[in-house]
Image 1: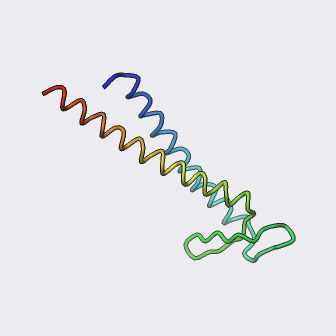
Image 2: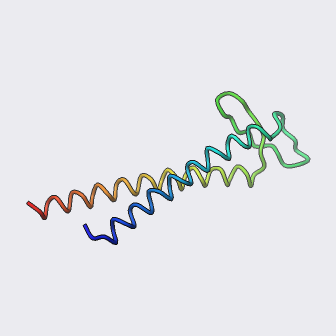
Length: 95
């Protein structure tokens, strides 16, 4: 496997991990600082359930959390899959 591909896979994997950790940290932040009942006048009507504790966030906060989770998980899965494919290619050609 070329050094450029290895580097790109590692950057993708670590970046995804950082995003996923950011998702976890932001979830804890929201659970500790957001209201536990909906506030329609401020737009906090989207429920965020964290282990049975429900708080209400705005649409923007909800979309941002969903994006962090999706991109982090998807990028991590892509990095693992891509790394496995490249490893199989390397093993096939070095026999």
